[in-house]
Image (cartoon, rainbow, N blue to C red; front, side, top):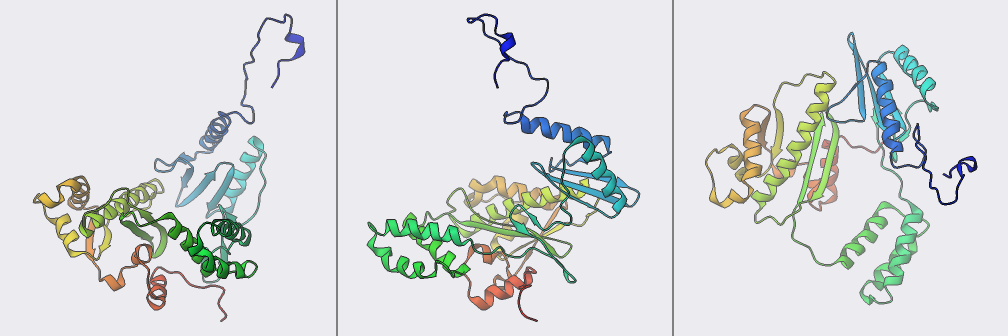
Length: 325
């Protein structure tokens, strides 16, 4: 942006401009845009969630309207179509918007509607991304003779690849990265109303000295996600007074979580222990034992055989909607 020529009276005098509104490209633009959106939503009697600032909701009679915002993309759901039209008219007067109809794609996810429900199918393998990866691995094979044979096999599927080939290429990257750092992996998932709504597979930031210590850290991370979800449910006035059930296959971890006595061997993870014990005491959480072969979280932390993997995926509610009937 330049100063208008009519203001340049002297060569040595410097002028600055003060903007009366946000200008596209400035670092404050996103904040200004969201501030205007927030004011507009308040005019329509929508409230902002305390757990997620991009979630807006409105209660009227026995109905609820929900608006979710990601930068300048919006998802709106409502029982009453009239409220949808009213909100669309209001937003159209304040912003330049484009209605895209029913949700089909959002943040790289495809949404499929059928008589059986709404599904999120697995995205297809990106062929160009795979080709770029193989090209880089071929370049590395000039100084890494131990991967030459594997890369030669993977390069045969450049134009007709499957997820198994993509996974094999990633495994080569793991091999090149080096040996294991011995850090445990936390894996957990959450069900709400019989539907899988959240899952996580993440390496723990520190090395655990035992499986019990690793389980305690994973339970703490999962419990934090549960509390966040319950906060959103409270904003939406969805009552859930029963304690949340947490399933763990390690009996010793469960005993430590229920035992108020201090243990010297776990004093370095006492913060996690106290956090879990507090939620159990307040009736927010109950921990139940589950057999290892029935623990669905194993798909996030262990390599499983095909039949076991398919059985656990079925328990999570995942199915192949493209399979022939």
